[in-house]
Length: 464
Image 1 (cartoon, helix red, strand yellow):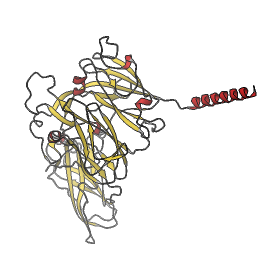
Image 2 (image 1 turned 90 degrees about the vertical axis):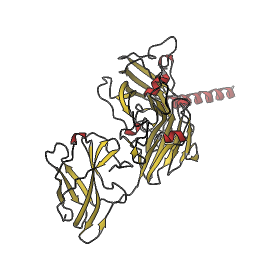
Image 3 (image 1 turned 180 degrees about the vertical axis):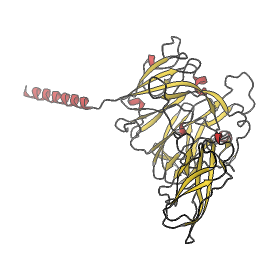
Image 4 (image 1 turned 45 degrees about the horizontal axis):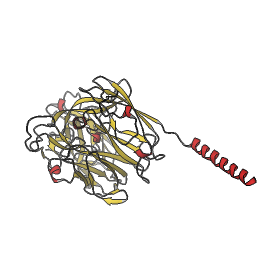
């Protein structure tokens, strides 16, 4: 009898302990998003150039760069009046939806585009009401009409999370009323799910410093056309909707732990192999530099950014590379040199005659001679060098700030998005000289739109 009593007490104690542990287990949070489907005009090569080699976008892609697309756009709240900014490298992709295992994801969806649309999510748990894929019963939320709204509720269960020992993984979401047409139009976006207890407050994984997402997809602009196709007409072999190195913003710092999320989507031609020049990546514990991808497949790899430079990132399928499925990524040195000069206030916008700018000598030596270069930004990743020179009063004493001037304005200033100014050579009074180690070192950006995301490095090609 005593034995039975002790066993019963042991079982009860274990049950109470387990109950206490269950009560103490942290609950997931609810993460809300406000996402609309909108029609946009998309430019596959905004610079108008093949930026890897500084050439014109080749035929046939250069003839028709701009097309009507439909994409997912994030807003700050349910009024859908203020757009939420997203990293420029996301390109045509919709906003990043994040969740930690145990979280609920609530997406308030509004269809501001023509036609019926939805959001279907990969990887997360949902019921039929929240699947977003069309069947004969046509439940609400499967086909949201123009101007209509629907709220999706998805759960990040254990099966949504990354493999054991890893901290995050990528899934996709996309339209599924007519999935091939909607995805091809641009209705596709990323979901990143972190393991329980391994997410920062914003949902990003705790063990990486920077994340990038790359969608390899051949968009077919003639998908619904009844006209016969001529070669590569209408096929845009893109990374995040950009071709021929027009994808901006893949910039990281030396020493950073960088996570790359890779995905493919599309048709039978969308058999891709992601390849990095200059670095290898870790894929499930193995070092690789080529990662194969099938349509709808995602992969997560890690890179230690320890090789400074500007490197090619491409699809290694030959036809895709020829057709422009390439970009550049940049690893910035961790200890750049101190700049000898600093550029201050300028009056590029609204100046009636000439341009003025402040320049300060940051060194302890007088500057005897100065050669500056200035470029104007006339499109994404497209610079044009100005022929006009700056008048610099010389010498410039140590720690002195002086006003420099470009007496003649260049033509058509209304078409200029921004200015970039940087030193080419400096000669000091003691005869010593300074010149940049890399193109654009010590540059200063001046944007017409003061809220424009700053450019971290010069584009790989500058046109004269």
